[in-house]
Length: 434
Image 1 (tube, rainbow, N blue to C red):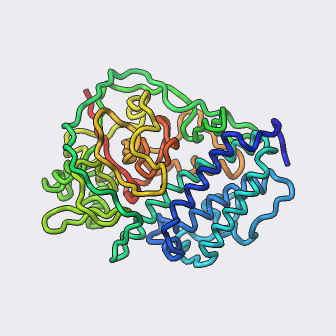
Image 2: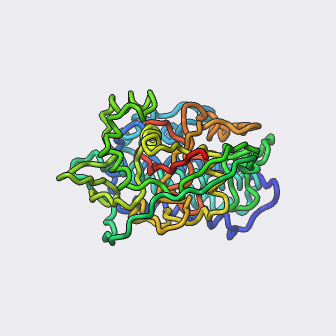
């Protein structure tokens, strides 16, 4: 095995991080049956069982196979099943058909995880810097899939007429409605954006890794300057109660507020409210991982598309922030604060405790297209396919959500989805020119 910079002790922070991440994924499916983890309700979603296996395939392929001499694959047939989109890794099972994989079973997938975990933990003390970077990338990759696993389960359960709950929700305690939106003024000018991501080398992937816990995805850099015009950004996200007012005022029926593509989408899909909302007896309810409940008017609205977010902003006399405006405002706020995922248990956006908050609860749509920063270069090899090739037709979201593992996001973090997608915990923060 390769030891480019010498071995690291097995008790290093990276080993601790690896163990914590892997354990959380298993805990998230503890209350699910094999059938629950096999179903696939739409092309955008994947079975929970597939998420568990794919993240394991990532460590087995890019760390154990490529950096541990003599390692033998757990099952030579499985890379075809659990490769996601890495063209360099060859042919793969079609994404829309992942729900057809009744075998391997959940038990076999958990055995696969245990096998790879043991092999990686044994090898980690002897692995060099390049492999350590890949383990760290794999941990962050798996944290992304933990959020996807939860949002995909939510969608799977939502199409079941029984609307089962994954977890019992906590009793609702009445809270005061938040104060009207306050505005944080910014004078404009030149601001520094992004991370100082290391340059590409012949062997080293382009991911910042100054220690076993410091990390940034390649799309977060290079760090560069951006010019902002004077503007103001809201001190909180839009609530369910405010969104209900938008609906009541005919917001989904008034073409003046909608982008052309958005208006086509809302009419073609018959969209009248956020995903999982339903009107019952004149009142709105929502479906969540704790089952169907009345909407909490004080909580952040979620499961809305970019099209809906942009239409609401127009209706409110505002606009969506650019991703650079958002990052400039979020700098200085604790990215580990707010409502984020800590343990397997009830997950939903919560009413704001007060004061400006930029992390947790809901991902916030920006008006910025997901495109490369100046000087961006993809890494060599298969890992170079991680982010760069998706920089087309998608929009940036910032801030993390209630289903994002705590410690995963930062001010420079760039999530991205297509403008019609809304099965993630996506919400809205407003901005305006001044």
